[in-house]
Length: 209
Image 1 (cartoon, rainbow, N blue to C red):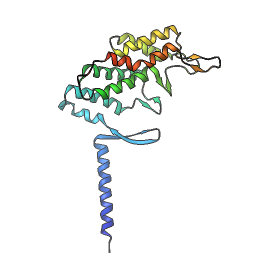
Image 2 (tube, helix red, strand yellow):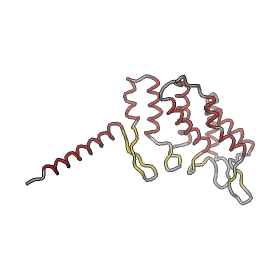
Image 3 (cartoon, rainbow, N blue to C red):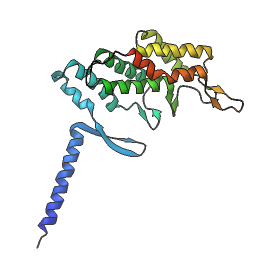
Image 4 (cartoon, rainbow, N blue to C red):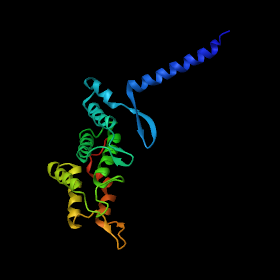
């Protein structure tokens, strides 16, 4: 006699499996990071419904979709160009300034701080300086100069200009080299880094919520 109960269990598993696959196709995508696979919201698909949303929600989805379509960082390194990172920081800042009272403001503010810290400090596997000389990388300095000039009225531009001014006093050194050739902090730059988040918080508009 056929084991219909076993067949039924298999059918239920298949239905659940198909359902999970449909969920992934319907609004999530699978990504890998440091050997792990996990789902994230596919905001790019939600943007297609923008004509039915408020202006603030569309702006929120635009910021989130940019990240879900192409992750900023992967395995402690930058996965996009410095120019693209600058654009993402500016877009996130623009959202918070334009829509300070939305429920989504906090999420975008956190993302902005993350982008800004990566931009001004760098990542372990994508530093802003040369590991041998500890001097600011030419391509990074060029991006900073463009940011400070083109976006002088933004918080991102103002903080970048501050960092450039400090780098002028250190002759481009992001870190000092000890007698043993080891990397050591430069007080002025360390102080700047420590105050990035506080500086941003003091400049962003307050939320009424």
